[in-house]
Length: 111
Image (cartoon, rainbow, N blue to C red; front, side):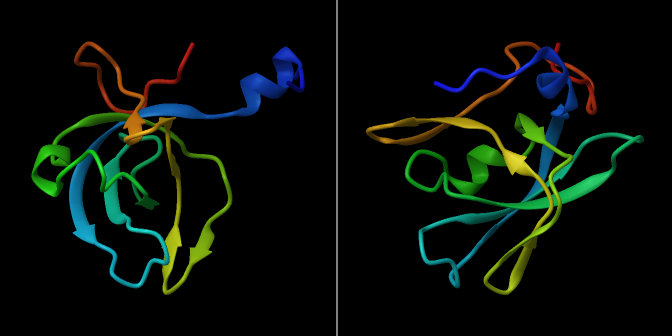
């Protein structure tokens, strides 16, 4: 495992957000959703492609609090531009989202 410095970690903007829209992404090579999330006033609304269809339904994701990396440059994924990275953990059943365990406001930075 590569070690990083504290300054490198602090540069990663891991922020809380709320999923406001979930759409199918049939053009994706691997099954995925197009997710829209609100990260609050300082960051705003961003979109991402998320390969979480094995565990989560679209209905289950609506209104869910998430943690996303919001300071990556936009990434072209087929016909879609992904603006943030949804965080989660790879399991043998699919990706399990990394989420706050209490209700927190959008835009908070992971400490």
